[in-house]
Length: 243
Length: 243
DNA sequence: GCAATAGTGTCTGTCAGACAATATGCC
DNA sequence: GGCATATTGTCTGACAGACACTATTGC
Image (cartoon, rainbow over all chains, first blue to last red; front, side, top):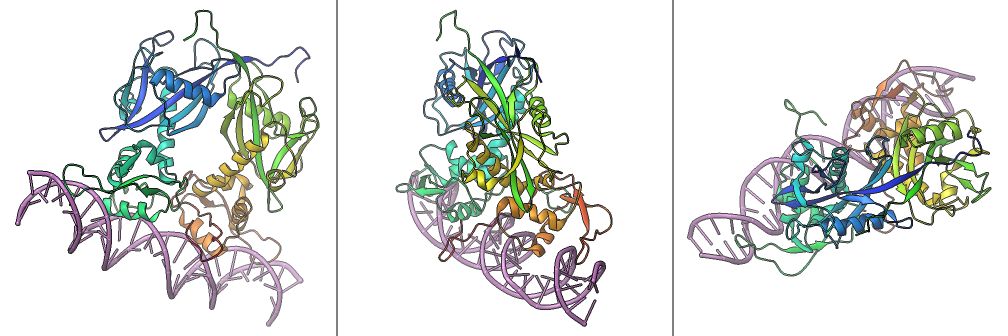
């Protein structure tokens, strides 16, 4: 197939991070402002090259999370996909392994050490292309958000958006924000409580200022939800066929 | 963070392929026998390095599929994940992008041009470690098979295991083989036919030698199945709780 | 007719969605 | 008490699982 002198090409390996959280009932994404070419000044996903020959890919993702976003406790971090089109980076052949991270709401827009600026941006603005991104990052964001939406259905990922202890209403708001659909609280309660191991009680009810105090829970050990949470589809206008 | 002379490491990029098919009602996997070090003589996934600096990752996967397995029509090929632990390959730092391919039953064990030998191996034998694999390929296979099982539930992937036209019984056998669960044909019929766009009629019934001839279908345009096909879980011994 | 497989109809329990009613805090 | 939110309960339609029954071929 090749002659004896053929050597496989060596390429640059990067990691990129889709970091999602909830702020004010809306899904937000952490973006950094690029300080160097290419795409100077453009918003981009946090990320960077492998530090050295021996760094593990997941470790690199965690390091970037720390360096660029100041995030140290990561409730959830998983590989999303690998993007390696030959021309995605004008500097040469760069293959990037994208990761999805989900974090609870944090104190404030974290100022990274490496990045010029890191800020939370509403996901809607990014997907609607009101905020242009560098490289092929728009596509990566779209796939990351869809992954998160899908994982909400049949895993306990939703709890990763919440603080250590949370109320069921807060958990419901996670679903509503990520899916963009309102849910009936009563059915939501029944569903969540009927799914053993999804959430577990954590202490006495906590007053929220107004109304009856809600019981608090923490994330349970259950990883796969069955039956899954249902992402209701807007009924197709007239008559409503099945989706 | 680094001094000005720092340069990111350059690494080798490979693609590996988990190619699944059905043979005799059992799920099989294509393996090649390694002809060179490391792991000479050991079974391994088909795969190889990027051909050159400009080759796309997906193209590389298709090329390996052709070169090592002689497969040209690929009904389904998708990225599975990227494996890059520093010590997974004794030759140095190799990062591999694994892909999942699903093909209909083929004429016979294809003899590759590159590989010393390519043969279909029952997935059970691999997962039970009766057939030892090179590198971290066992883990890749496990994740590929689980991905296939999962995609059967909520996508039309099952049709990729079938020839151009097929009967519903054949389609049912795909589910039974991949999931390892027997299904009730009558409920299966009802379910599949109630899912618009999953399969579409293709010509008159075809006699199978004995019994009533079955209607034939081809894969429909539907990609996501809702409601999903159900993978019934063996009831947990005594009393049967929900899973 | 008989064997064998394809395909339909019916019954029943479970679960999702709608929504009424009750509980418990703050003022 | 009055307001606001949390939580429980009930009703109903849709669907999954079990299984009896009919249809269509080869012999």
